[in-house]
Amino acid sequence: MFWPMLAIALGFLGVAVLGVLAIKVFVEAQRLGRQVTTTTERINQASEDLERAATRLAATGDSLR
Picture 1 (tube, rainbow, N blue to C red):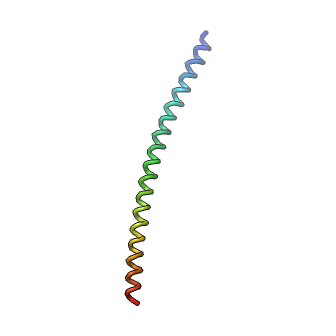
Picture 2: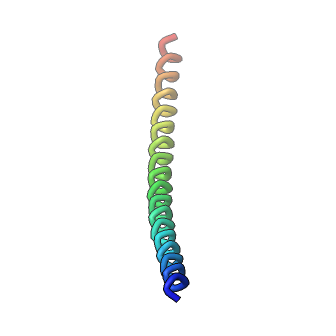
Picture 3: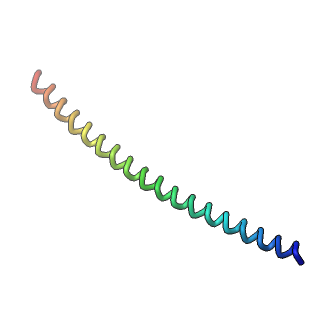
């Protein structure tokens, strides 16, 4: 009777460990998603700034001709 109870207890502990690891993976995936969103917004802002600067530079170049 000892071995079946030990097997059940170890099985439960294994499932509990997997559950904790799954929660950690979920939290890290959420954090990564937030970082990707922030980085995407920063890249979009930088591209808009570059586009504005290029437009002004082109206008300056046209006025020099």
